[in-house]
Length: 315
Image (cartoon, rainbow, N blue to C red; front, side):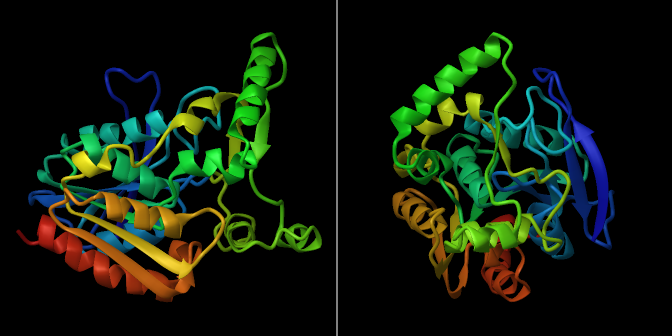
């Protein structure tokens, strides 16, 4: 696998999107390749699981992969920083496809999307209306709107919205931006303060240790600009609009972020899909599916035949 840092923008964008373009070792630009748009988790960046794990595995299997940083995050442009806007996140997928179809070696009729955690739900949501996506995969997909309405707002979304409104007005009048850190600062802090729920603890182990810690993976959110997340549903209208082949990969070791539950929901709603598949991994958790070699290997045993069937690496 070869990796090249690139950037792109659309005519309607005021900033660049930073991305990694991953190609197979035997890449020949005179040939046509199927392409995968790889979407990183909430609070993550392109250098983490979306490129280094799933992007690499897919490029090694013969795909061209574009793993990019979301607008306002990582090395991509956009101000203010640390905005997590679901509509923008979904639009970024279309912009990555816009770039992909300009590459002479990409077959624009063989494009798929894959995402991890929040990125998986964004990929599913994009596929509802972005029919250039011919197949879509969510790895432990988390519907961020549902998570914000529940655990992230302490099950009081109206109070969260009131606080966001107050903070946004204060910032408009010159107050300092409120950027919330979403995880404990260290494993030791988590243990000392009883923050040992599976997903919280394992997220800390991934994002706050050398295992996955990367400069662009900020795990931060601009509080005052998160209002619209609470009214967003990644899976709205999936019963009608999810027509492409889809696969949800989930671990049966359940945590508070809800990837297991959300994966089952989108699978259940996707009955209009031409080929819907639910892959349950019995002994693995949400964050095992980020980078655990055995868990990822098992997942890829389902992912690669699915993509080959619908994109035909050699076709």
